[in-house]
Length: 100
Ligand code: SF4
Image (tube, rainbow, N blue to C red; front, side, top):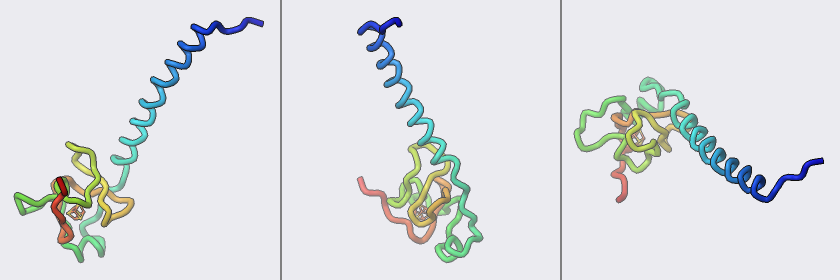
């Protein structure tokens, strides 16, 4: 039986650590973009007057405290609509200025 040299073992371990973060990153992106878009006709969306395109030039989902989408993404999660994504350019009455 052939035994693995220390150098071979280290090379294998290095390759494994490079692969894990890439797969984790791919998983995160899939999670954010795979969420179905919120329907503006949904009862909560209607009550909050949610729209996919904000008419207020200073308020949109991308600069709302409740939005957790990736910077530059067109859609992302919002705490008000669990399991759905909202438009980065969208808006609703629950808009809160993002801190920082
Ligand atoms: S709370 Fe309203 S404005 Fe803020 S991200 Fe969610 S849908 Fe957009």
